[in-house]
Length: 262
Ligand SMILES: [Zn+2]
Ligand SMILES: [Zn+2]
Image (cartoon, rainbow, N blue to C red; front, side):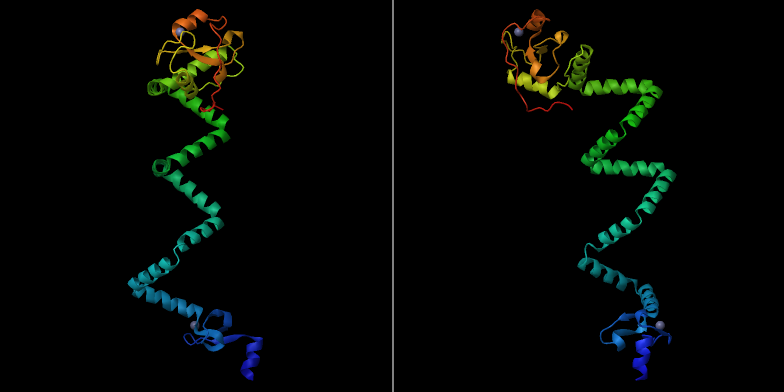
């Protein structure tokens, strides 16, 4: 009777290890135990377990391995949970570490870029889009401070991408002529030549790799530098036409395979 009353008012029991009277919630669950609780309190059991683990590290290791085998996602979920709670702290720590060890940060970024080139490219693109003005100003500052290196870089780029250089020059030319649309890409130019089987649109002779871009409506007359106003012509026919009307009727190409640059 006494016991049930004390249980009603203060659900407690005595630990068999430390002998202290503690609340029931201070004891772990055990179906067979008195009141459905373990005879030793949580604190005592923790101390015991920790000492036991220290004395038998191989047993702890084996137990942990067994557990992880049964719960393969445990570490990941635990870290995700922790990160969600401590995201700010984690980012802050990372920032401090990188500030203190800039070379480590660079190494890590490099490793990431080599492992995930596609993702790195995407990130770079997005970040540029978001901070276009800042990025451009930064690049400009760098170019101003490294004129010689910039010239070398430019030269290397032109050598490595002659087609891009050509595209750039042609666009510059069109921009100078105030072309309304100025979006012909190198891929589209290749497509035009392939569609014409590398033949001049006017004299029908084959000039593989030597064809020039002819604007059906000349740039000087308000023509656009775009897929549907460009055909491939040989040098001779192109200069014969110059800024006049087309030498013979042409059907602008209705190609849509290569995407216009946006
Ligand atoms: Zn105890
Ligand atoms: Zn020709």
